[in-house]
Length: 309
Image (cartoon, rainbow, N blue to C red):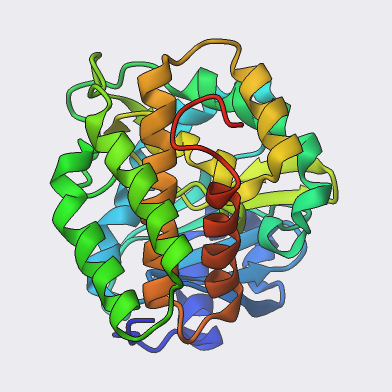
């Protein structure tokens, strides 16, 4: 995990809340604060029972908060009928003399991190998630946030995929069959036709760590820092990141033919790429290392073409 470039403390957050959020939150700005999550880009602190404060921990992530503040109201409107919560900013915090970057207060999403729920219990997520993605994947305006690595044509990430895979092979972190599986899915995606339509909205980082659920019930989708527009196949990779074979069958049925065969083949390629990223960069995070291993195993159970088996 990249090192933090700032020290975020209870005191620094309290100052931001009292100077910028009191008009919106009232006395809630003085509610108890506790740190509940830290990713590569952001820290999340729970504020009382109702809110969470999301702050970037390094400069590279600072523009991502601005993207969330700008587009999440639009995306929430698209997904209004999904029944899933989205972290629409309640307070769009600004930089000041004590904190250099934008930050947000969002409603607290009740439930557990999806990564902590076993795959066999996630099958109930398949239908609502598929319906939500179909609602999300509509053409985005020309001024959508740009992400150079999410939702782009697969060929643009070919060198990075093979470099990471070679690195894992060099340290004997992958067996021969797994290497063959990941390579076969990636190559099949490269051979598939590219996304032919206009760029559509995509979450850009859709995996079980960014889903909130109560056991088999999906509650919400969080962390839209990588939101962009492009090939929807990137989001559809969640079929292998989140589900087992039964869950994927339900996910596929709920997609109801909304995506062509080539898009689903590219989705498997993106799942392979994300598995390799997780395996190559999760030495200090066993939960995500395990997710990489599980995703590779799920891909190993499927042929590189769609539908599986």
